[in-house]
Length: 160
Image (cartoon, rainbow, N blue to C red):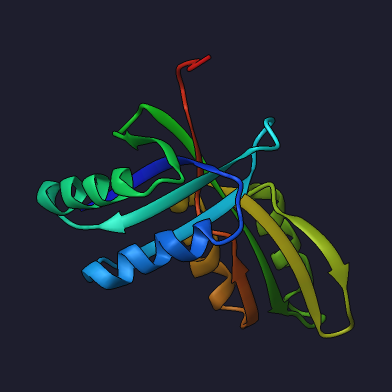
């Protein structure tokens, strides 16, 4: 089972290293990790996706709570949050496939951000399901490079 954790941390040097070290030291694998600033310059937000059952999640949460720089942890459950991921990919095109790739991009609301003679650089964002479907479709044309940001998530409820 995959768990999405929202972790608010102090914006200090070494916090990311301590959190990553906690995961590796305990043998927990991070599926995706995304971190960035918040409205408060003294805090940062991390979205961490981990695999495991409820016992693993409980251990991860307990270990994170022991870290001094962790302010709060929220475990997102199904339908309690909105999540998105950004992907940049380079897809091979030629005269025969160019219009088909453009049509698929339109359907998925993806943007072609750079056009070369033999490839398009495409930006697409959405939930994991949408991203995976888009990637599967583009694989038929040939993906020569792909970068994924990892999930960012926000509660549907106003926490403020």
